[in-house]
Amino acid sequence: MRGGPGRVTLVGGGPGDPGLVTVAGREALECADLVVADRLAPLAALRWAPAHAEIVDVGKIPGGRSTDQTEINRMLIDGAKAGRHVVRFKGGDSFVFGRGGEEAVACARAGVEVRVVPGVSSSIAGPAAAGVPVTHRGLTQGFTVVSGHVPPDDPTSTLDYAALARAGTTLVVLMGVRTLEAICESLVDHGLPPGTPALVVADATLPSQVRVRGTVSTITELSEKAQVGPPAIAVIGEVADIADLP
Ligand code: SAH
Image (tube, rainbow, N blue to C red):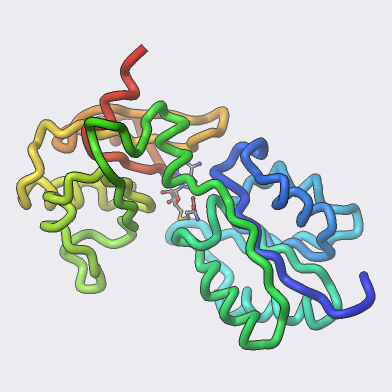
């Protein structure tokens, strides 16, 4: 344990391949006293933590047991107040569907010094690992990243699928394995051409990576056939076809 006031570093660990942890992220791990890790964080990178560091896995399994967010915030704050350097280690970027914002605010409110090390988000790196550029000159001038954790007709959904269908940007769906069918149907119902290319990539950047390519009308069935499970990303838009080029 170190002397002086402790602190918290929120480290985005990238999509899974430990080679995609940033240099700053690795440096933070190397001087951690406590690492609070998520399931999707690249766990192979934990070997960079010093031998004395305590590692706590608060991994969230979809639909399964998870450590309550308030409890995680408390762990970070208590650790720092005890004089430790606490590294909160997550998958991708902490601020992209990662609750990093909530943790940063909780630390700041508690008077704890908090630093953010941005990570390589799977929302861009996942498609890239499958050969898909999220933007491509002449094809699309932007990309939209959404969470598919609830289907379009869910009362808690705040996404405007009619707007998404006509936006003309690449659509990147995270957390959408269970809801992919409803999402694709909604997009087509709102006017997205049924032949629009689509691709699903699971376990992106890991040795177990799989990708499935189809159209917005066929992608759900094709990924079910391929038994694609989380974590997976769906990319919908003309760029999804680029993955097939030599
Ligand atoms: N903060 C993370 C995203 C957290 S939400 C980031 O910036 O990447 C979790 C979702 O991210 C998963 O449901 C999945 O859609 C996506 N995801 C994360 N890692 C992935 C990977 N290696 N391959 C495919 N999808 C991944």
